[in-house]
Image 1 (cartoon, rainbow, N blue to C red):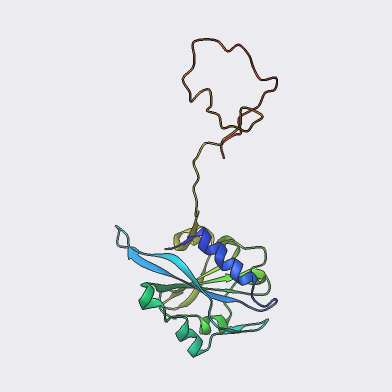
Image 2: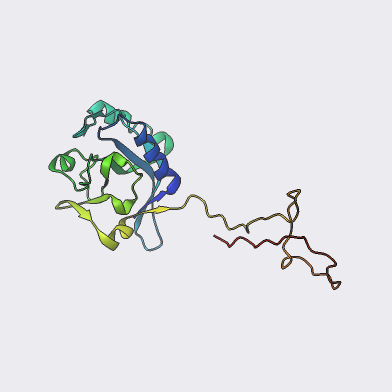
Length: 200
């Protein structure tokens, strides 16, 4: 299982948006591997690496020296390569025979993600092609199996109660339910009413 925090995924899409228009783009996801309590190998992406690739509308090539430079940080940062992400110029997200050959790794368990339309529209994993290297070759993963192979987790979970104002001066107020109610009935009300915004 590869876990990609949403900020990392969005950063990758941002970088692809700055690449030459109409060309295929390629990047790598690096991060940390560990085994969970069940002994299953897990990967957690922390870093987007953009190699100095030679790109064209139909394909990309990462020369040997560029691939070496794209891995020079492994030891210093304590990370490993977890996946490759590249784009196609149409809605075809399968691996071509060239994609099979030029993938960053041919080891079983390697992961390659193909984004349609050069990542225009900021595709999700379910709109992409998820390819897993198996002993017999590359295989595209589809349907619910995708969630067993790779997932994007939210970068922020904000559980704060929404704030609203109780006066024209925009002062913060504590809700009636959350405050100590006074036994004395209120003698006045604001001439307007408001409704609490529902929680997201």
